[in-house]
Length: 315
Length: 306
Image 1 (cartoon, chains in turn red, orange):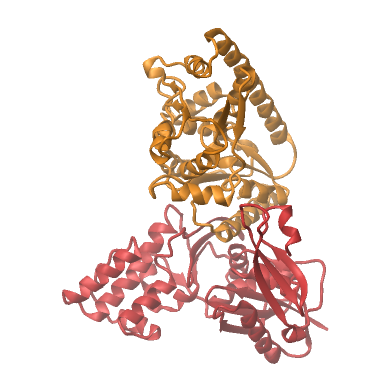
Image 2: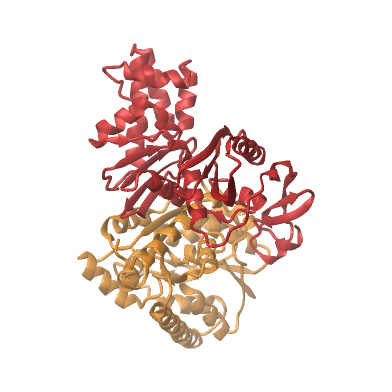
């Protein structure tokens, strides 16, 4: 039997799945939109993976990360449920062992992870404000009537990027409209926007952090060549983007699964199982905790979200 | 006569002194319960947007007490010595409460060493308002003060014991009214307890020692009383912990300076800065706490070689 390990990263926008062998080689992977339904997305990812995966491999452990890690972790009976920062660091280290800095800009959040000797020593995430993340770029692309795919290409043609306020997306947006109205070309504006994303990131998330090479850039926005170019210009360091950059979180949990001592064979037939989640508001005290109950084939699997013992009765 | 005491802001600095004083002069008190979502909601609804989250919670606690007591105890405490100021939000509380809840009956007193209004005078003033003689109040104050001081001493000793024990430890740097509030710091300290990480508190330190340590390490006396005390706490305990957590409520003036300063100055320990407001976003906090735990655990395993 050849052992394999499954990692699933359920993000706000996309769901990623990876199966690796004992040497961290990617055997199968899948990348799909979450579309607001993490359980359905995970089922689709698992179906795709089970079709791609060579039958000589047996998945002996599964792990989850991303914002729906707990929910999916319970549903799949995952051995490892890990936060996205550690997962991304571990995944990236498997591909670029000497990495010192990981820049990540996703759909909803952005983070920076500093690594020394293969261990995370510091990190930062964007605060309440989602300024400068992927969703901002996509909404601005829509406003300018551009496909996100053409965005970078157009930006790269600009020789004189327009200066766009980078502190806050609300200001950036009004600045953008202003620049268009006074006659800047679309290419210059788009290039300015890519530059604004980079400056915003370095001013907010990267503030005060000592960014050292090798630098790896990942997350959805790392697919944008113009943003990569601006990062290199600003940091004066080469920025590496791995073609599998979007899978790093999933890869990270798969690697963590490998380190687990115990093993449970993962059964892909779980995709036929019916999972239902229900949010219940506990009314036993004024905290009104929102309790999430997960049912597997109509049997309660787990429930969480209650601050105190009173909530356990509700589930 | 029943005196209502909001379980928020100053209460966390003076809990033992106040409760023992009222007990000593034989006056019944009611302390509002631990902060819950309803208190937060009422506080937010009755406050201006610009107020800090902690002071919004205070207003929520006052609202809770309105129909449950005869008077609400909201003293004006500006400082505890010359050049040891509390935040303006704290000494403006009584005006804030009076203007928010028209006709509310307050039990008031003022402490301001700049104008020679000593703490003991304030307690005589409170006693007088409740029909107690000067001697009675003074005696009650002195006894309450020594009880409060010995309770704190015991807590400090217990903390030193905890810091000398084995296992991972974190130090919480936050105003006491945030650290111990059920809707602010408690979720964070509960997280560490559930993960077998011991929690120490920067505010558990002798005040004089804290001032001296702060002055020594930063070359300057810190004007804000609470911040000065907390920085002293960090100086005293930081070598014994694996990481430091800064918890701040949005928007806090003193914290906006000192949290930034600490992040820049402390390079030998991992620091996590958390800013809490009324937007309930515990998922984000959870992710940050989990990854911070991973960092301190990795550092311990590598023998602190990072």
